[in-house]
Image (cartoon, rainbow, N blue to C red; front, side, top):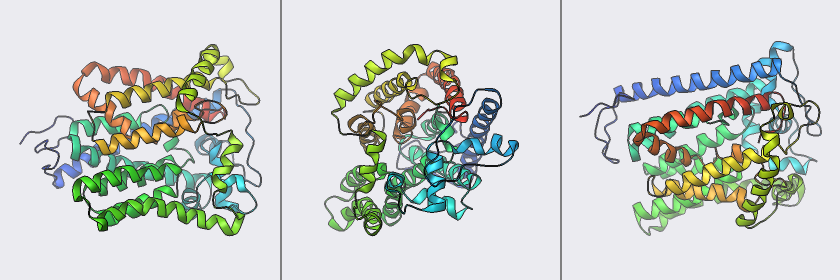
Length: 407
């Protein structure tokens, strides 16, 4: 039995023969807890300093919403984490969807969770951070099963310190989606379908990306169980979850697809992905001077989406390169999900090409496994990743904290 110096894990690295005892569990939990704590404190500190010392943009709240309120200390520690989509989630937690079809673009499970924890900014942050901690655990476990503890360790490191991982502190649904999606895939991988399926259905009540879990479910069940209809039915949990949301919308709006129509309010439309990439490249070229001008990035007044076009393109290139390099390095059921998750913003872009791409890379979480496989083999790539990720993360966190547009 070999002991891995990074994690303290002992056992064979064979994917299906991993010995997992109490000592390994405690060691992994300690490591994950430290990664979670250090990454969350890092983003908290950057956000608070930016909020105190950098110019703020103004942000328009959704109709009928409650703006975060409180004293200066509250705003520094909590209020700043509820910008943009966070205001929509708080609004839904307080007022629901009635009379506001545009709100249906924000799926119901996360605002419901916020409501269960008091309905305020702090409640939303608690849900996000607790979900992210649990997501890291499931992420470590599923990668450890397939690729061993070393790659699993680098996977959680790369995800926790990714430049847009600050959303795990914010009133955003990414953390809850990651928990449910990764959790469902973990139980799928361990053939506990009656847990995996309901978790996948819940993931579709957080984000439309949840429906993409059909692909790894169908592949893994077919590879593991063959053409056994009783097992393959578990791939239908995700459509059932989405149908449940659609049924909820019918008596309120008379249209089960009102959430899809609401996306047009943000300029989302169907497009061939080569066209999207070309338009994004042109926008990136035009906006590059603004992206390197800190004064332009942090200008007061109305926030502008234009400076982010350059970074949107950079994040897209990063994701595509990692996806290509990962095709033979990570399990196919994870790779095919990542491919589908990247095709959504490319085939269904917003008015600004690749808008929100830096955040949407989080939805394609198997990409972090691809990065980890490279880091585990090539030592210098570890330094390169953090040399790039840390300053970019500081910049994007500062922009978000001061109500400028990030993703």
